[in-house]
Length: 295
Image (cartoon, rainbow, N blue to C red; front, side, top):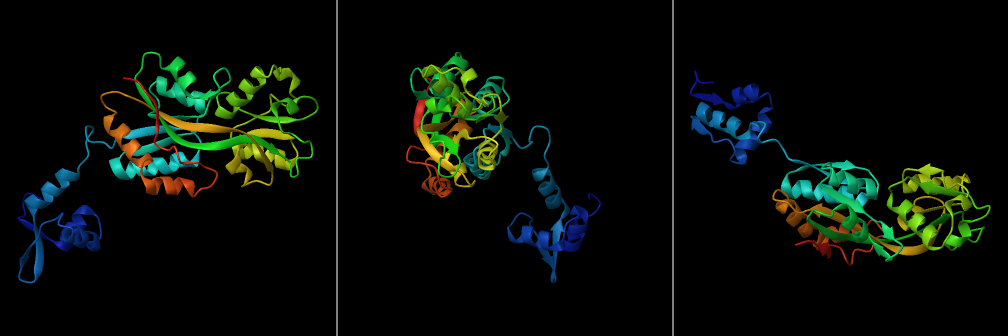
């Protein structure tokens, strides 16, 4: 490149291995300065070198990557908005609530979502976060609220309406250990004095709401716990038992200010709230609320 003083558009396209249309577009946007010799546009070699240097990525300029843990599709949408605003690459981990919290504690997650019910306080999430992040600074933000309850066969032939109805011959399909719904079930059983051994199918586990609902729809199980939105996608009835808080937690440290600020802006954006509300089955009236923040 240093032996020539300028290039034609076609030569630049060949050097960069792109089409001439791409180069014309960069010229139009003002990213590549050109000059004319007669009717021909040319690009100075030093300007081309400057453009390449500006867009070259080295180890110190690599795109920042963050990880969001959790399974809800609202997190996928949140990730896309973070990418658009900050230019970060967002990866998704589909760990359950407790495992996502542990991943953050171990430095393997940047945003952890959780919906974990505590039977002693009847509160969601904060009792567990306080136990895990004893010496960490963090902020807990409300993402949404949604109904959790029982998936049952159409018409609810076994008349399942409460946790006490899971005893006897009723066949349960459970969620995996560490998931928010598994925590809800375990806490309800504990606070109602019901042994896990009295619940048929307690050890039968599935990894997501859809799989649980499908097991009920197919007759492989009589009941499972999940969220209302999934019941609308599968041919099962839904019996609500609780309004659960689905929150996200971020650690407060020197490198996280921009991410925390951006996430708060997104959650409080009316357009984003409407996008999540349009999915159905979500209450976004508390979205963006600071549930708890350490000093």
